[in-house]
Length: 519
View 1 (cartoon, rainbow, N blue to C red):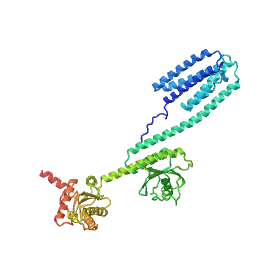
View 2 (tube, rainbow, N blue to C red):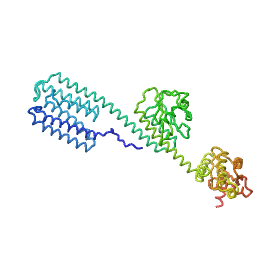
View 3 (cartoon, rainbow, N blue to C red):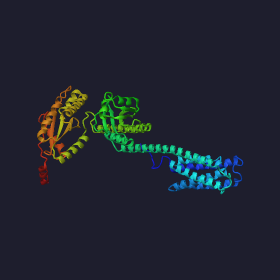
View 4 (tube, rainbow, N blue to C red):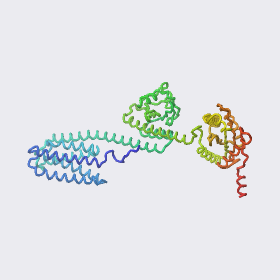
């Protein structure tokens, strides 16, 4: 997922200035309609009303033009028009009765709109501007400088208007500040979610997905500790965690995990119980106010995000809802990583036996030879060929032959070391890469593998002929190592099969020097 976010607010300043333009049209319309609907509201000043309103409309039009042009002109147009708004409304009030004007409510409307559309700070500044204009108008009427209104304005009424103005300003600013804070929080959450989604695009392994998810969630929401658990074939394993000591969670035995996966909803836990939730209790000892987010993909649980809030008992609903989206994105990424892992596994495996295929064998041999060269360690390669395999197929059928190949691959995998590489080289031939195995020990290891094939069982007995070559004694590159092991294999066949033969070739530096001299 990619969220299209701008560095500015969620609603652009230009668009909010557009809303203020409509507000100005409404203010001027109310003044004109009131003057026309209420006879005597403006007295003999009707001739002033239309020209001043036209001037006000001209300023508004200029601000709208600057808004459409954009850039830094926006802020200048906004500041100028807010001052002009105050002057126009003050003039309309004085024209329709001063402090007793029935249109004085327009100032409150303007103040609320500015606080909500611009910012609460701007609203408080405009409240100060309106207050200054009201005080100036009151003093002007009191001293007789202004005509057209009452000769005297009661100080109490003027004070009431100012008090009402500031009550509206403060209350609106408070709500506007809370609204802006919530908008900033939501924008921050969306940006964090978009950043996590972008980061997840660059990772492919389940462990990397889990670490990215946990890192982003704990930093965004300031959780103390957390875990990312994976659920595969009813077994729970820990993929990532911030706990000091990580232990594998109980395999499906934790009640809060079962509840989260069954209800598909987050579960809030005050404290983890050692009896009901043994795995999480061990992984997050002493956890307080934990939240378990189920990770669901394609309707099935694939894991869980477990986070600890700490000593704060209240977990906001916004936090729960947003963190749940993080968990949902993490679940999808985890599922995709597993699918990619499975595709890569199948691409490297022989479809019949499950052993590595020839392409994977070639790559692993090159990699291990490079490591052996750097570490100055030996490496042995054994080539196995099942004896009389064509005769077995002809006598028992291809299904029995396929079964013999599978059993041979299983026998080689079981009898070899954990870091040895077993591959089906082609047909009835297998190859085993044995790192860190010198020439003196290679034949003994191969005999053990050959015996494992003979003991594999099945409807027909199967034996194998084997050839062994060792780096660097026999060869110093992959191609030569394979060729010399294959030569030794054919020597085993020529001697009666069901035996192992070690290559007699010499591929060390001396052989290379002799080859160069002969050339």
